[in-house]
Length: 230
Image 1 (cartoon, rainbow, N blue to C red):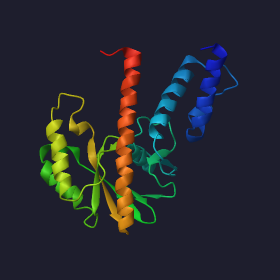
Image 2: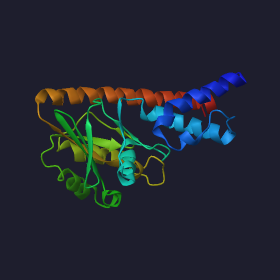
Image 3: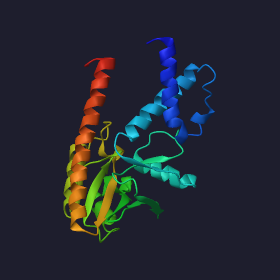
């Protein structure tokens, strides 16, 4: 890649993500970019792409504590951004935080983030799952939160323990990186006001699963191209 073209590419990436980061606004494009600045732009833009590959709402809370919680909820890997890119197909959704729980409210659907106590989940999964589900007794559906992604397209209250325990048995080796304690963070409780919205919600999550699969396949292809098949 020609030197001038490479510099323009860095500038384009920075301009796309700078509105969401005060740290990146400190980089002066009128001056020659240093290797450190180029590295910061590359890393931040890669995270931005991963976070916005699905429809998102940009959430700008005033309190840092709320921002930190929202970024954790959304799967941010760093603190480079001053916003949280919250995954939702509805850009008009309202974001609220109550008792350290993220709540997404739209006209017909309310989604509530419920987190496991990881120590309790490992020691007594049945009791911990029951405790979390009891926090929202009126929720009709639940979605398992696995890392920054949602695992399924909606489970009944009775199905959550079975699905969660299946994953825990499959990924129960603490000596491996895919140990469930590293990514099985909780559930998202879902409340509907109309049946049509419930049907729409299920369809959306089926599409999300397809998108997540494509993302992972693309990431594997990129690793193979960069490092080889071994």
